[in-house]
Amino acid sequence: MSWFKRKDSNIQTDKKKEMPEGVWVKVPSTGETVHRRELEENHWVDPSSGYHFRIGSRQYFKILFDNGEHEVVAEEIMPSDPLEFEDRKPYKKRIAESQKKTGLSDACRVGTGKLDGLDVVIACMDFSFIGGSMGSVVGERIARAIDLAREKKIPLIIISQSGGARMMESVLSLMQMAKTSAKLARLEEEGVPYISVMTNPTTGGVTASYAMLGDFNISEPNALIGFAGPRVIRQTIGRDLPDGFQTAEYLLEHGFLDFIVPRTRLKKKLATLLRLVLNRNGN
Amino acid sequence: MDYLDFEKPIVELEKKIEELRELSVEDKVLQPEIDRLRKKADQLRQSIFGNLTRWQRVQLARHPQRPYTLDYIHRISETFIELHGDRYYKDDKAVVGGLGSVNGNSVMWIGHQKGRDTKDRQYRNFGMANPEGYRKAFRLMKLAEKFDIPVVTLLDTPGAFPGLEAEERGQAEAIAKNLKMMATLRVPIISIVIGEGASGGAIGIGMGNELYMMENTWYSVISPESCSSILWKTWDYKEQAASELRLTAKDLEELEIIDGVIEEPLGGAHRDWDASAEAVKKQIMKSLERLEKLSPEDRVNQRVDKYTAMGRYEVRQEEPAGKKS
Image (cartoon, rainbow over all chains, first blue to last red; front, top):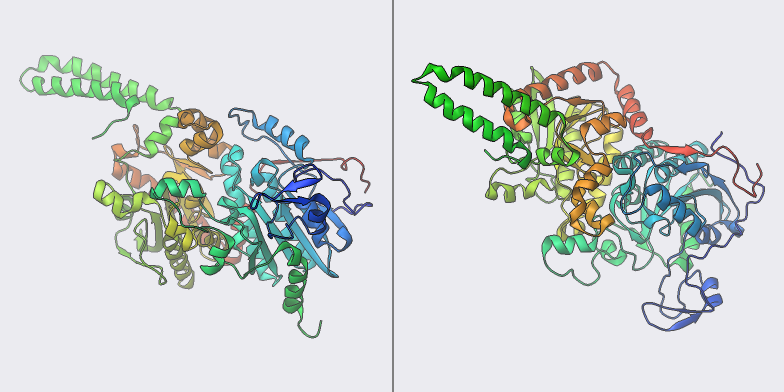
């Protein structure tokens, strides 16, 4: 398959800074400082408060794939500027700047490899790239991740973090909701499990398509998850929002998540869940 | 009747014609002048409506006298039985649906419904659906599938309702479930944007095998106002945002997102509801004839293929630097 390329160097070693620089890192929720190395070893979760720093696809792949080893999929799908969109900045320039700043080509990466010995496909979004917004590239890469899981009949995990659909591709972005959902409908026909992992934040068109369509919808603690953003809702209803509104805990309480899992236990829990799902006929 | 700013010159001319007409009841001498002004009004209308900006189209799409979903249904269907409720929570008034006939053939109608006067607008929540609206649509589409009845959806919403309870009851989940369900529905789906096609709220009932837009409507990932407020950090750039978003029927036809543009009477759909309904009916019948011929499997394949092909991106030819294949 042309879109599935095996790489010699599977281990991702490049390290772009998505987290605060420096040896000591301030925890936003408590104001305390914590040593950088300690944070790294704890998957960027503050050991004392449990605060989850936002991490991107590189870190998630490193955490979830055994020894971080994986094959990169659909990386050749690159953003263009189909509408020649320009707000205060041309979209082309915005893409180029984001690419330079993050070292990423767009807001989603796909990899396949072993998770605790199980073959899986993982698509992971990157909030650092234009707010993790979903345009044509994110849609196509997610679609190819789903196709790969379907063809190989191996579980699919999508880690979402997104402000929603990307405005600069207008209706093309909107249609990615239909595209990814249609692909997931096909995946369902094959009985291949799909776990949706929502991280902070997951909103808009991403929530209203693949993020909410998991066989299992799970989340990291305290992640913001919703359709409309809190600001818009506050404007609409003209009053303050209740404490904890649109948090993972709130969604769990209202029946939209299967469970919440801290990042430090994410891999183990995914493996346990997948083994329970796949444990048929003694396999 | 209300008029938009850019319609003013036509309105003034029409007023003048009307005055002359009243005078001419006694004096036929004015007739040539009336004819001359009529011709001028026609030309003016042609030139104004032939060169509408994207923002002007947005305004027409929101025209308070525009026909809404039930106006179309009642004109197109000889019989119509509205069906209510999502069976879980309540009956959302912003989404209507039911069984009707089109030229003797049954269809399942589903559409966003706006209100006409202040009270009615509130009753319909300005055409902004809550999760139960999408779940009602879900139920009706599955019902249509069970009885092998084609689905026709009319899109006209300023967006899914961004309210506290809507979030609580899973607005995103309701829309997502609809998208996945529509993808593989075995009966034909025809979707037509008749007014505003705002984002997830619109596509939540809009995954047709064939997708059309009326001439003076818009369909985009976000409204021009919200886009302006987010990207320009002020509400003042809505006209520019409308232009950048390329949200008109013609734009979407060029982007190959829609299958065609349904022409409106000159001056907009609000000028002649019957003619607008007739144009919509004609398109529905044409599309139905095509889609009824396909097997259920082919219909599903066609729909899945259509939406999975959407998107514009580049394919990088070489391997990324430092990596060998």
